[in-house]
Image (cartoon, rainbow, N blue to C red; front, side, top):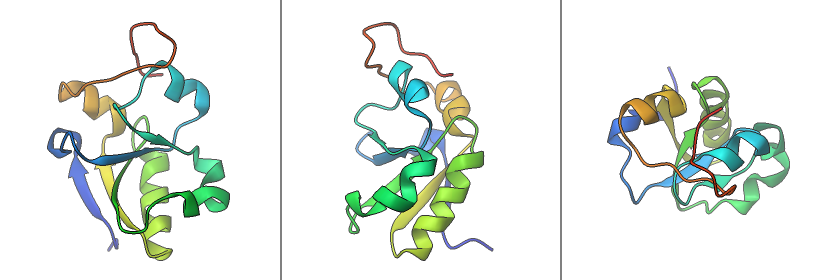
Length: 108
């Protein structure tokens, strides 16, 4: 049993705090609007940059990385919700994307 909630991408509110744990090259070409980006390998050194009073919806491409980070963050006292299916489900749900490249956003 996990200590964090799992939510479908379709149920993530537009006002939600999204934590994207993918690599920089993945984030740059497409991510949820306003998402906080901390790559999975950087989380242990940078998690204190996160607001401990915020509920973070943790996401990656398919869910493998984000499920691990959601679990880890909860052990550190943070509120983390795992976005089931990751960005693959995000796209299927018709959720918006943005990029930092100036090109049409896409998911790698």
